[in-house]
Length: 381
Image 1: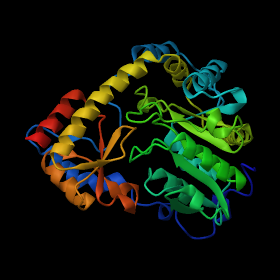
Image 2: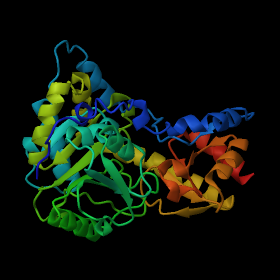
Image 3: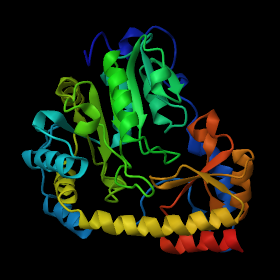
Image 4: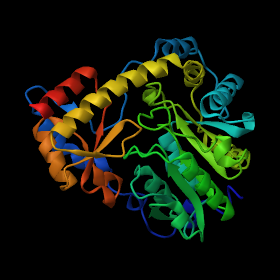
């Protein structure tokens, strides 16, 4: 399977007359501005549950590692320090059950969103090549295809796709926005289908540590991939599990035949994680205690918001994992957004994630305990 081929898509189409901006949709959260203004006018202030950004402190041991590495005047390496690569491979084996993982199987990235947005371009995809992602999905999968000027298609079951010209298949389990989790058998069958059709699989697993009513499994698990990493890569982030969204700390792991060319491209592009951040990631991946503590915080907030939404007349679907509740009152998502904004609560409309979400809203439980209590009080009043 070739990871990189052909001229860069931008060079191919320099004479097309199309501007860079024409390739991109309107940034979704800009549409929320008037509703945010309404919610902010609430006498007790806004409860912003629209974005899944961490609000709890960065673990002290991670802060200390960052500070201790602050005197880093030289350029960091794109591939990361030996200590970082060892920490990643150790975590993959300890937490995900991966086997026989070496340096060649891992690559640090500057936050997972950067990777998602630029991956099709870095893979050399362009017009005529197809990228596929779930029907309800994080908007950046589409953005990545658009930036490369590749074709894109959504799916309910990827095995029903026409594999012709399908060069990149995105999986997302646990899902953002729905919290849906693919079973081990579903993942096994999808990986087998993709390999049979020579389709590269990238599995976005950034919420894998946050299973509530399900135990998410990685494509790197030998029961899923049969002991081979051929044609599969997993994407992981420390933003959610360790409250490191501000550090831009993530990594990919899997097929060395894919990661090797990506490493070379990223060297040329200077896409390197800062040295202090690399040291912080080593500390974070080596400690499970802070992850369990953060899970307990999120579990309590999730339960409180779930009960309040149900009492307010919502129905919740999926949501067995991740940091969100996928909720509906069987009306336009924007009607629901307006209703909740009137209560001082801001949520994300489901159609941000695809037309299939037009009657749902995504409710994040990443607010502080105090703000979650405020939301619960308003919903149950």
